[in-house]
Length: 392
Ligand code: GAR
Image (tube, rainbow, N blue to C red; front, side):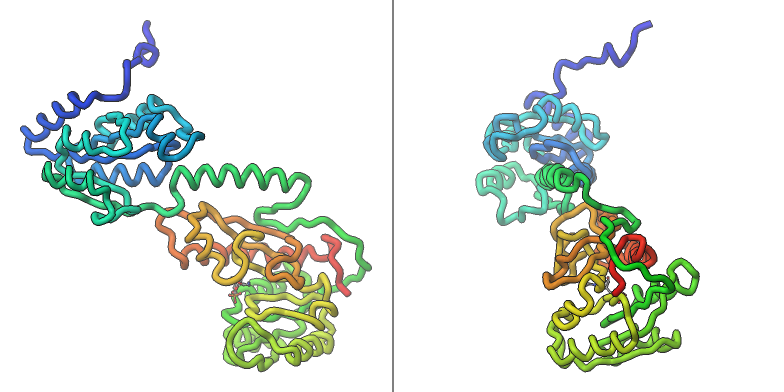
């Protein structure tokens, strides 16, 4: 018996221009529309597929003009394309939404537009009708093609894919023997004086207090042996203070004056005194949006811990999840780290990753990050002594 797959060896996946013209004539005879688009399609990814499916939906058949290897090199540099024109054409032809692939050598598709006279021309959202190449635009107008600009999918591009591969390789090199944790807390132990009993913690927060709640719940459910000695906030009306009060905990409002990241020296001292008075061993920042300095940093050296909504060292500072989304990352996460004088720069104790999906918004990403924060933060505190971190 013959193997149908083995026998299936087309000479080329690429059509000639004449074949595409013939195809167009057949479609027109049926009252159907041919959609035309062009690109390099090197390392096909979900952004490409989405784009091509949307393009196909603009008419009845889709023809893709594929940059030849030489023209990709000219456009993108000597290391590209990663895949040959034959391979790129074969992959495209495997897509249900693609009816034909035709190669072009010039930097522009003007000649193909003139030869094929597509009914619709689709282009990615990095262009507008105004910024289309004037020569191509004139050809499209001349053949009466309708121009449609389709939205780009953030982060899904061959360039972004290659960048991620490079970064991944670099991280791999750096993390040999180091610690990158997904979902649990691990750190390199340091020697510390052993003590026992519930870990005495003081929590500082400015806002919603969902991390405070997760820690409080972990204590109540017996997953975390800790004593929340005091909850301090720079906002009198913050939800974290209200929740702590409702839970029957000691709460303190400190007047830090105005908005912003700054915390006046007198307030740094005031907080330090409150924490010491409450016999706190470990200071837990749960969405505390002010920068800590001395005497807090020196009095509680290696005993102040923070949770940050990114995979540090990436995206320090404000609205880290928005930064990750805008950079087109495919994943982000949360980091629990020790606090030192460098903002979001202290030793990493645990990280949890979350995916960024196509169509995500800042809110959906943040919600996913919060879920991870609420797992890893109580876990780090539960493991504090096991990790060899200091308690006093
Ligand atoms: C958390 O997402 C935390 O990562 C972030 O504030 C939020 C507080 O939420 N912290 C930072 O950005 C610190 N740089 P919560 O009040 O609901 O716990």
